[in-house]
Length: 240
Image (cartoon, rainbow, N blue to C red; front, side, top):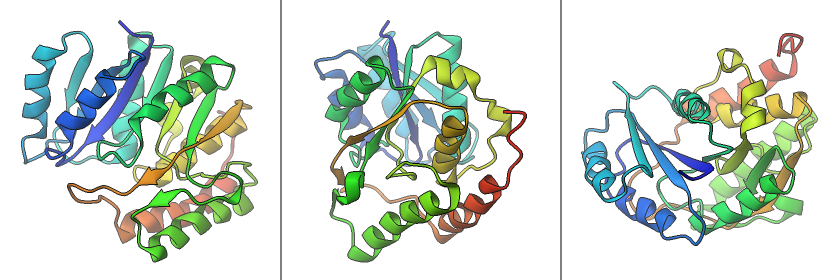
């Protein structure tokens, strides 16, 4: 068993799932993978089940009854990973927007002392995004600027979904207190870690928009993130 588990939430990712799994398993460093599938109607979970025979004790699948949200998928995965005592727990998308080879850089950052390492698209004011429309790039970049201004958190890419947590940090987080289920979940987890005094390190990555499958971003998700930042700012943190 590896000391690291990569959690990949899926919903309708049949075009990508086999390739991303095989890519991760072909890296020089060993990572286990946990797929959290929200009852994909396209057979994503069936592809994973077939691959589990090829990668026993390295590839795992948790199936849920419906599309329950990104945040709850990751929390399900965090609890699963902690029960099995993984030292390093990663979040990564299935669509290759997060470069799998950079798992090793995130791992190294935490191995060398960070509690949370973040694959950052916007480190030091540089924008490292490929194939996004300019409008989406601007919206995403300034969303992170907005988060920093409102929350005072010194993280350049607050909405990033490519991260690594040390086990000890996840053990300190009360998952019952995490409220958001969309992309605001990413902000909430980073802010919670920051409020807990975690050492956070950002690692530069080049984010490439998906080629296959459909994006799960929606205006509802964006609004949750935009307005949710204020609720985080004024939340009572005494019981965290």
